[in-house]
Image (cartoon, rainbow, N blue to C red):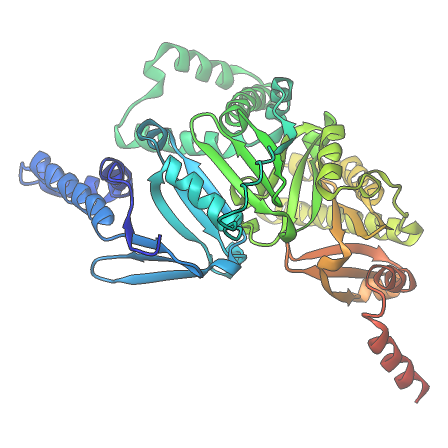
Length: 499
């Protein structure tokens, strides 16, 4: 496929539809400006025509080709751009199909190059290819093999091994992900703006009027509780719907040619392929609410995944919210070892516990002082600082949980580090994925005799911390994980102290 190719002709129907929502603010402005002269409808039609024309122009101005060593994309009319990706830099291939794409049998292919979003992107997108062409392209980019000799019989294809599949019972974890908060907030904001612009009065409608009267007539505490309960129910429903839409049909498989393949989605399907040689570990993530119902997610620690956008959007999610035992099983299957996911972790000792409680109490005390001062200076009622005083048990509980979450271990060829309370993370990182160490000590850590050991890597979040350990223990862990890496620095430091 060394000749320049065009995208599927069916994108002539999709590109204009995609362009109109993007141009909606401009179209509304044109319609409002034209309405002053009595030609608002005409100007709106002209604007829609321009948007449709620009959408169609995207197809005419976009071409691509795949050579033996590169993938190239040319696009743009007034500003012509050429994007080129070396094939040996390709880390992932992400195939996504929205509802309209699926209806017309096309997909969007995103080729990851190993750079995170924080570095400015680094991916090439082909929107859209015929579904069969996309499947062949993905297979060619990640599973390219030498052509067999003419006399050799083709080797039988080995089917992929299934590691995990969605269990419908996992949907019960949807409400505890709080993924619906953003959606509810966006809808609420849009509705409020629409009501304001249209000069509508919600009290004109029976149900809304009754609800408003109920909240207005109820005591303040009861009104707050009612609003919170309704908000929690709405968010739970939205989160459950979001879970089903995002993860329905989830399947994780391992291809014998050295890749992991994740497929998921109900209306919008997504297929992500990850090279195992770029995979340096896994992370078991347990957000607080999900942990309360014994749930967790499994996330890949790999180069080339867009961690800047989060695990789900970035493509690093290996298992959606599911029972924590299932997350550990999948993690063990990915790293081909059970011990790093199940081994006991070393405690960080009483000094780390004291540091956790000290930080929590200092934060609580600062909040109380600020609220009390605001009440005295600005005439606030007394209940805000009294409520802040009542937060003391929560601060102490948070400190205790943060200490219980601390732990580390060196298990076989893996570094294991765990920390966090609102989101507890157990990171399992391969020793050969560690490219360096950082040892940091703040003023308060030095006074407590503690340090934070950070393993730097090109994968995942690019740094994984062993928080608040003794310096001798940090050096022992670093030496056990990467023997000899810190020796020159330790010898230099010893020589300086001797001099």
